[in-house]
Image (cartoon, rainbow, N blue to C red; front, side, top):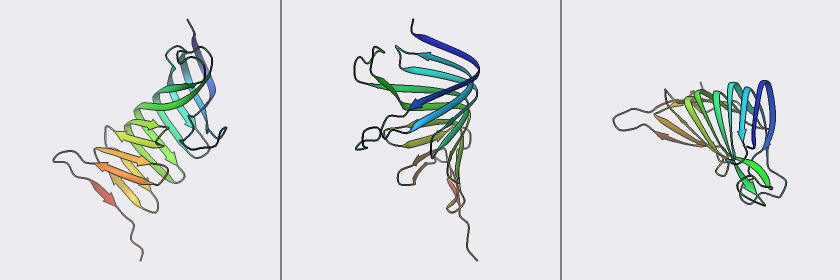
Length: 167
């Protein structure tokens, strides 16, 4: 059935899909730990639960549950040969995302590898940066490559940004 189940102190390493224009072999690697992992090879998908922690060289993501979606290079797109790489990650149940000193929190976090983009939604999405301050809104979209934040406050809702002032 091409399904892998792992429980206990699960550790895994997955390559991330390379960015457009990146040199071959330069794809970042994600180190994953959790209490439970189910991987469906034919669906190109993995489900992780119980203290999920994902880390690459410059980013971290924590969540009670995480879905990883893979793209395949080479051979067959349905799990017959080729290489699987993380193309998307969806964390739920209270997500914490970190990049350097920057920290984002929300009920749901979506990471898209091709755009190097995080979308934080649910609860009170908040992005804290020690230099730029704190931003909250209904939905926050953060682009890692150029440090851009897009804030969607929703109809009739307010966006809050707090900046530190130098004295």
